[in-house]
Image (cartoon, rainbow, N blue to C red; front, side, top):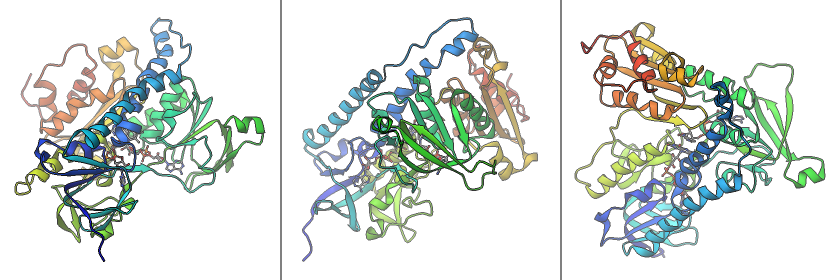
Length: 487
Ligand SMILES: Cc1cc2nc3c(=O)[nH]c(=O)nc-3n(C[C@H](O)[C@H](O)[C@H](O)COP(=O)(O)OP(=O)(O)OC[C@H]3O[C@@H](n4cnc5c(N)ncnc54)[C@H](O)[C@@H]3O)c2cc1C
Ligand SMILES: NC(=O)c1ccc[n+]([C@@H]2O[C@H](COP(=O)([O-])OP(=O)(O)OC[C@H]3O[C@@H](n4cnc5c(N)ncnc54)[C@H](O)[C@@H]3O)[C@@H](O)[C@H]2O)c1
């Protein structure tokens, strides 16, 4: 006998960007959100927002050496980690709690299921406790989770992922960070700034390797100066240290092996002791937690749910009526602004099934909130060379130190690289490492999104003098592109 199911107009799996889909349109209808984790999802609770709330004070703590080079004596006298942590989570936990209460208790047309759900058929899910839910329309916004390497010792209390490391009781004395991407670099920068002795271990020799070479190589040099960076290693296992007293205080020994494909130096094994370990080696889409096959949903080679330009899920390559996907479970960007834009497309399409909108938004920028920051949009120089060939592109790397605001800062490392198509001036990519890179990238995003060629973008507007944006203006003017005729 088939289990009788509760029926709703809309089922949303995931309360991150999924929670933003519910507009006044749904008043008088029935919407249910399923989320087995903390309401509000990754960005709010364990992602973008708390990390940046740590990155800002950690950036202040890292200022004394820079101030000293400008003749200003600043002293870092320590960080009150519990106070920083409590300031962050008092605000964030309140937002999550209020959001849950609003959806679960206050609105009469929404409800929340705080359980894991899996598909048992098209537009039909079963909760962990056995309830079955069907809906006219379903949105899968189930996000991603930290990837864990297959090594022993991950269950030790001192071993963390980004989900737990921000809630430590105290600042670690020595933090071993495993990985070299966004998350590893942001946390290494935060904890080093706050006064922890940081050791970062990465497989490859370049940190932020998905970024342009100009950014990645400079950032790797800066990181090696700010903390202990060991490249070409991968963790093999973690165990408590032998000394019982130190082990009781959380100290562990992380065994490292030479990473596959790295040149041998003669040393093939090493061990590092730390009182906290952060594993940050990528994020896995939560596709496998949904049993997509039971709903006939296609999964791409990257392990995300396949979709068309309207964010509709695909089954055998054809769009499935009434099933939409968005965010980290549906794209490989794993960025909140991408999840949010996809949510806007889905929100429209849920409400207007006869007037679907496509997701056509232009190039995707990304920023890493380290000290200094890194930001990028579009093709790296290496990608542009591969796609267009050396004769067809033009590249300019402008140093922060060669513009007036860079002089004010005595900046010696900041760079802005722009790559464009020589014949047309079309901007193909922009890459910035340095102070406020996350903000400085925006004119390049605008130029690319609105099809403004490099010379027009530089000369068709005022750039306040002597703001740091001049580094972007000068990079654009340094390209070998057609003159727009603007003065
Ligand atoms: C440390 C860190 C820092 C980050 N910083 C940035 C940043 O600065 N800028 C940026 O753009 N991006 C950043 N990101 C990435 C960003 O957080 C994600 O891209 C974004 O939050 C994804 O949103 P989403 O709605 O797809 O999924 P999520 O917000 O992850 O929501 C998915 C929800 O689905 C629930 N769920 C999953 N499976 C099931 C199931 N089977 N049943 C019930 N519920 C389920 C989960 O509990 C989760 O709450 C960061 C990520 C991390 C981890
Ligand atoms: N500021 C932001 O926008 C921001 C911040 C954090 C996270 N995110 C998103 O979250 C995603 C996941 O971030 P991430 O940093 O976990 O992944 P990532 O893919 O950016 O980096 C993973 C890193 O781990 C290294 N690695 C993998 N296996 C390893 C091993 N066994 N030993 C040593 N090193 C190993 C890789 O070489 C790589 O450097 C990012 O792609 C990003 O989209 C964004």
